Image 1 (cartoon, rainbow, N blue to C red):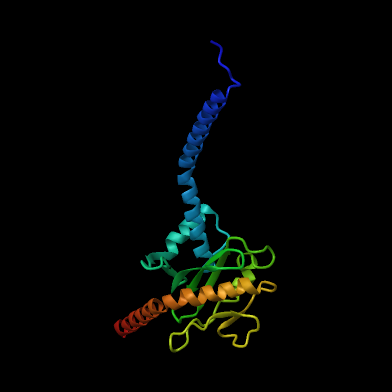
Image 2: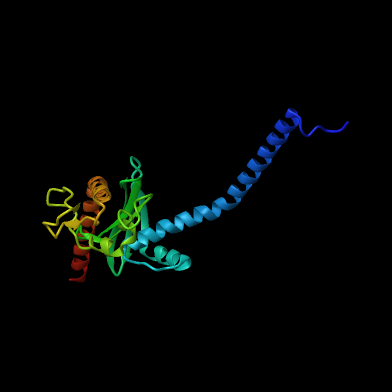
Length: 222
């Protein structure tokens, strides 16, 4: 009996079989590529952390090697997933903290490197969908990121004083917002306030530990 390829039953069965085959192929390709995708994501994170340490323009192998050299330990807050990376670079102890927030059109994120004095050692920010040439400058403009270097993060009472503002009145703690991207800049400011507020206790503990170790070294030397 000749198969009626124009019948409804044939069309439904044929379509179902094709859907199953295509789904299987897509699943196979996804599983095959997943290790590579995961590796690329992990490498991108490492590069962003290095960017916050003012280490840029490294390819994959160089970035992996440099990350292994400078990043000594990684810790994660079980409550909110915020991560801290304890690093040693140019003879200095630097802690990098991860940040997450909301911009104008989507999520924003970043890494802030903090030196032993509680000041910004370096910064890097990223975004999901901010406007090119405006809000996207938080990622694309290295010059804007470098404005954070040397800024004081907390006051004597532990309050976060580092901020992004329209008009800088305190150069020691403030960075001017990205031109034409006030709402995205406000998002960065809120992200800094939220992320660094929760991180302050840990950072002070690290600084006190560093001071104690330095004093101990001096005593031994004397």
